[in-house]
Length: 190
Image (tube, rainbow, N blue to C red; front, side, top):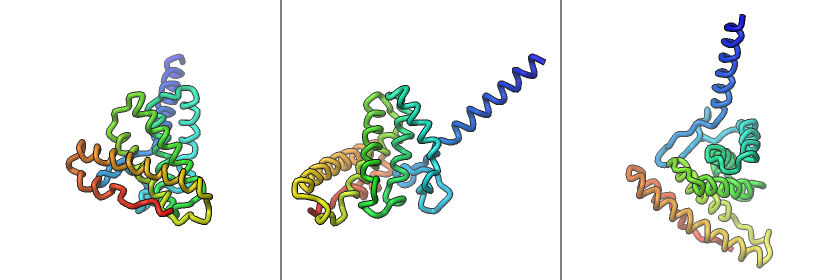
């Protein structure tokens, strides 16, 4: 009887572990671009797909704010739901804020020692997306001081995006052309 109980507990524990692991977004690299594996052609997740996983990662980060795996996957989820493929309109409410959270998390993961190449790819992609969010005509929305502040943010993100893309090109010679194509060349319009 005790052996049966132990086996049941082990099977249940293994099933719980495997099912919780399976909820993390699966990733792949396509032409030097880190993407989540999705069932649609755009490789962007439907809204709410990773909601439970995001909640779980948030709880883990409250307990251990330097958990690099949780930081990476939480930043990845923010990025996946707020990238241009998922939210193509530059001024979509909340995208800039969520990408800023993703930037902070991926920077923290790399700062505390995450060396996974995917983290370096994700960081460059997040900065690239942040630049994209400043490309719309927003002159009517902001005061002059806000425009100056936003321009400074854009210029900083542009410098960092291009620097990180150059670093990727040095590390991943097979996709160097793809990284060079993604370098930010546009200017802030306001």
